[in-house]
Amino acid sequence: MTESLDWRRITHLVIINVFVGGMVGIERTVLPLLAEVEFGIASKTAVLAFIATFGITKAGVNFFAGALSERVGRKRLLVAGWLTGIPVPLILIWAPSWSWILFANILLGVNQALTWSMTVVMKVDLATPRTFGLVIGWNEFAGYTGMAATAALTGVLATSFGLRPAPFVLGIAMALIGLALALAAEDTKPPANQTTGASPISMGEALARGTWTDRRLASASLAGLVTNLKDGALWGLLPLLLAARGLSVAEVGLIVGTYPLVWAGSQLVFGPLSDRIGRRILIWSGLVTQGLGVSLFTVSESLPLYMIAALIVGTGTGMVYPVLLAFVSDNSAIHWRASALGVYRLWRDSGYAVGALGAGFIADQIGVDGALSVTAVVLVLACALFSLAAPKTHS
Image (cartoon, rainbow, N blue to C red):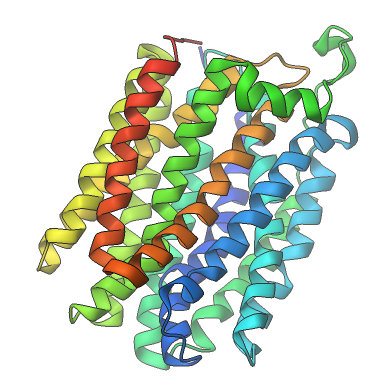
């Protein structure tokens, strides 16, 4: 039943996450091209270092954010995340060297960890186990819609006005609007009487449960890591692959934007669907679907086929992204659920760094096509491991 949900507060948080996703979207089309065109970086490993920097920072802060929010509340961390994000587009506009880009991505990682983590946790606070998939689906839909729209729009702006500064001016407005919305939000931290008086578990205990002692949570962490490993590889390599095959910056932006747009929209279907049919089937089938889509990118030679590949990868990602968060919420108690989500997001977003550095290194050795083929194989292997490790679960 959904009529008991506080849709006013949930909708406010959904709108906030549109701008959270948009902050990442300003980079997805332009930054890999900027590395080669303006900074003359030829090594794929070096180009993808900005994604690794972002991923490592976001992963680490995710871990602490979940546990810290159990103690200081959600809203404080949400506002702090937006304050950290304001300098990011300004640095991207004026950065004189690639090291400044890497510094901006450290700040972006903090921004995304605090803001996105808190919008997830705050919606779960307002939901029930029967509606986890529903509210998380809306949250992730909002974030990736913002990301997709911005990725596509920056491609158009870069075609018309150049790689800098026009594409990044959007980020200034997004950060300011996001901060204003965060200041107007209400905290959702459950009062002590709702947690039956239980104290939050330690960060060490939460890390152990999400990494090895709880088989369900550990399998979710692995599936999330591999999903973002794929996204890190595509984020860094897909614009370079498409540009090398003769597509314009606007066409690159269209494809790069379509993938997260489908990812976003499909979560409105798969999040609520997982409340009804269970999480496991959507997770393992989503991993396989992602692998098929990535493989199609490597063999396609026309814009329509690239669009089909983007549709497949986006659908597969949408099948797992909100469902894994709901899976973790199912398997954690209310007094340590934010910590469990923080640990899951620690491992999931570590995948950005693993995917970016690993794919960059492989691309330098055997080419971009080879790196994406390896990524597809890893996704299929992760599906097999998840199927073996995670027993059936339903909220």
